[in-house]
Amino acid sequence: MSLHLIRDLDSLHRDIVTMCGMTEELVGRAVEELGKPSDDRAERLAEEDRKVDWYDVQIEEKCLKILALHQPVAIDLRRTIAALKISKELERCADIGVHIAERVGGLSRSTTEIKIPKRMTQMAGIALDMLRRSIDAYVELDTEKARAVCEDDDIVDELNREVIRELVEQMRSSPDKIEPSLSLFSASRHLERVADHATNIAEEAVYMVEGAIIRHQKKFPDRLPGETAELRFGVVNGGRAKAAEG
Image (tube, rainbow, N blue to C red; front, side, top):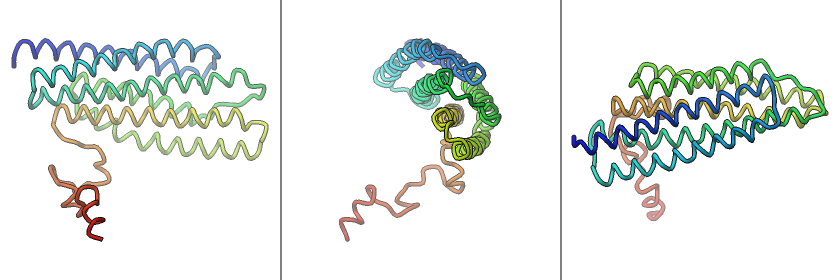
């Protein structure tokens, strides 16, 4: 490995760690909104989101530079690809953090009082913890911790379904609470997406360390490395060849 590649990978790693910290803090502050809605917090978080966006672009530029100039292989290639994909997940998490603050902050302007569902608070805690642990797994190269994050995604999915059922029932029984309930409905979906992005980050951490793609593993538990769509589904060029034959 050349000294120039080492330098560029180290610089990339510093940027992604910085972006991780900024995103984790932003989402954490957004989750705090559940306990004390504030009308102006979303605006402050939007300013922080702009910094995350800046790092997203900077990291992409550095990844493309590494790929073009150094043509890395093996672990260096996986580090570069993982950083590129993780930065996108972090950028989306930061956007979601702003959206959560906007939805929950709107409750402070509502004339109708509404309680935050307990399951929603529980879901927020788990989703934020998943994000923190996925970042730790990436930084510490801990694939066991990363896989544990992936397993927790089902818990958040189920809590999200329970929160939605509770909110739907509340809207049916109290039509005057429809508007604030819809804000919470949206916030719940955003929290579920945070868990999804945390899972994606954890999957990239596993890929970086082991070179294994574990995405969609539950759907295809018997998939073999390198197995093609043609072999699995008999599809050629997205099905175009079969369509042409017909």
